[in-house]
Length: 260
Image: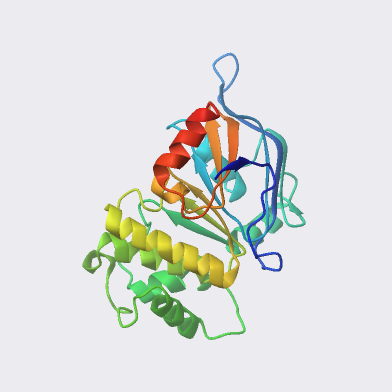
């Protein structure tokens, strides 16, 4: 039911507008020698346009560091990261700012602004930008798309955890991203709510063709992806193609079999 592949393709999504990602020989160290800590070492992989890839591994394995590099929140010490035609490793500051504006981020703790309504939180990434569309109309449409129609004026404190995460997803999509990066997006949610949020991400990815990379400890999340990249001590130990509909325990057995 599973196979190991470096370039597994997302079924039926050859013409989607999602970003293609190529990571080659990437390394990242923190601190100065001799006490420097290597967070990532010679990491290489490719993600095809429109794929959903889960990034797994124990705490401290480098998952968040890798997401930060892919989101251009940090730069590698070695290697290259290309998203479509842009080399993040050598891009100018202006290019990186524009790239971050077009990349969707979803975090475990939602990161909503508590003094703003749900609608204004979704609008926030667009406020400093000139656009050729109605910002409010787009934000309202996205809230409806994530199941929050009519909750435009709700404050974050009036929303459940699952609802706050849905607002965060709508906010990530308001910039029309081709790449969506999610760091433990179901980590603060119960299993039922988390499953609903994950199903929403899958639907949006299918409908919009967005490329998704999600860091997670949850095998139920990983089992919904096309592939699982397993990190250990800053290096990728496995690249597992996932058969859709396979139960999480089979995925765990496959990772263990491969030595992950």
